[in-house]
Image (cartoon, rainbow, N blue to C red; front, side, top):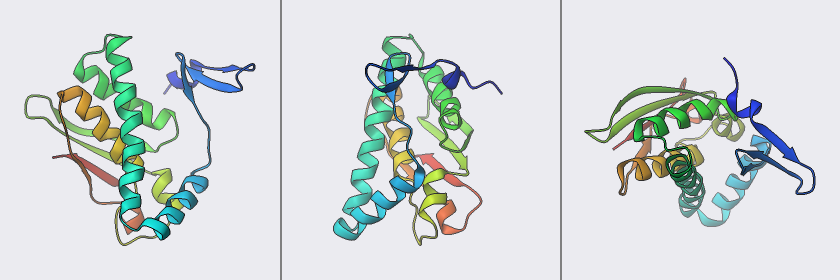
Length: 166
């Protein structure tokens, strides 16, 4: 499979930045984010999950809006592009298990989530960034609030992380 993202990623020395179609991206080790997540969980408890979710939501909604406005993607094209982009930027192997735009539903499996792998064992789901991105995407695609749940999670000992638009 060709990696369209890497092929179109360019480095701008004067800005010290990596860009994909004029949108800046950042390379960071998953362990750095897992450490950040665990530290804010120590300080904030369950409120930390919401902060991480909102961070992902921002990325998912901004990207989806850009794909619609600049690239003129349809709703289904946004969903497919985002699902194809996930593995290309190192977020694990995404599988779209079903999408029904009329019923406002989709299901995604992510194998080898770097967030779950770096986090390690957990009694609860930990992929708040991915859940946020998918919720942000769904909110743009469906034009109103959406709720994506994660269950199961690799950090809980499962084979994959599952995400379901409710």
